[in-house]
Amino acid sequence: MRVDSSALADTLRGMSIQHALLTSLLEQPSTGYALATRFDRSMGYFWQATHQQIYRELGRMAQAGWIAALDTGAAGRRKKTYQVLESGRLELLRWVEQPLPAGLSSEALLVKLRAAAVVGTQGLKAQVLALIAQRQARLEAYLAIEQRDFTDSAQTVAQQLRHQVLRRGIMLEESWLQWAHGVLPLLQD
Amino acid sequence: MRVDSSALADTLRGMSIQHALLTSLLEQPSTGYALATRFDRSMGYFWQATHQQIYRELGRMAQAGWIAALDTGAAGRRKKTYQVLESGRLELLRWVEQPLPAGLSSEALLVKLRAAAVVGTQGLKAQVLALIAQRQARLEAYLAIEQRDFTDSAQTVAQQLRHQVLRRGIMLEESWLQWAHGVLPLLQD
DNA sequence: TCACTCATGTAAGTTGTTACATGATTCC
DNA sequence: GGAATCATGTAACAACTTACATGAGTGA
Image: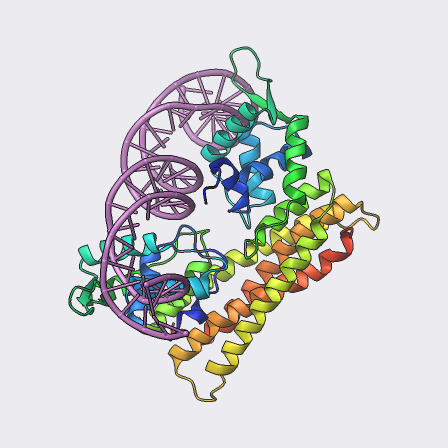
């Protein structure tokens, strides 16, 4: 599948670029350049992975034995098409099954789902349930703040602006929760 | 073309810790420690900053003359309460009014709204309208992909997982759009 | 007194950004 | 032949993360 439909995270800050690349390469062996443009076209709005980052991570993964490069250029042409080796597939599987650190990015779960489409969904249901618990708790905290601070009938513009910022947080939690409940039926216990 | 690196912070990245801190300090003069914990509460859902980052930026802003520290601890107690100076307020105003670079983070607009609650909403309506146009375009692109790739009645689990990832992106765009339309009435032309 | 919170920082290491650099291929 | 695109890198610098370090105040 194309990376387009996976490129939906708000931001992938702080999460491993390597596992996203492994997933892409499992879907289709590619050159670093192709990966970079695919990321740029589809994730460009919110995740700019520069070609330097991608080449660096490809180099590391090659050294770790997760992927291997085939020289596919004509004589003298430097062009490396990378493909995932068994140890890379196992690493991706390990990462998918490993619980996410508490309080951390739901965006990582999107990458995990895409990876799971390739290596299997073991252990993901628990992670989605953990996400739900976390988001639910936050939603309730935000709603409590809203009740406390923004229920006056007469509010200044400044208060209404702050309310809208909180409102965005509330909508975000609700949106994640709605999504997560829709994902659950696809996952094994 | 060469770009001055000090201008990069907000020109290219659209989002600056400094302006978020200025806003918080205008709302209430505080210590770095208080900012770190308050930040968690008020903007924690879209932005986390460590205390090291905050102390570093406070130091820089103090050096730039945007803020000033009052020693508020008892004798021997090191405790600095920062407050915003006029040049800091002007800088924040400048940043709020300056259009966001195209394609960049909607989260910056949340920070701008909070700042606008303190320094005024000049120029923000155009930025929210730009956000709407951008999000709408992306939503349509995602919906087109959904139509093209996920309308089969019989889908494998792998396909359904990928569909859910796309679904998350669609929901995110819709959620932003709904929010942005609610914010518009608060802003001046 | 002991644990916890308040409060500020330094240092080392990793990651990300920007500029610089090279050369082949493809299409007009 | 020239421009755009394909393709891969190095080097310098900026930002971020994690661990370490210190010490005062507060409440049980």
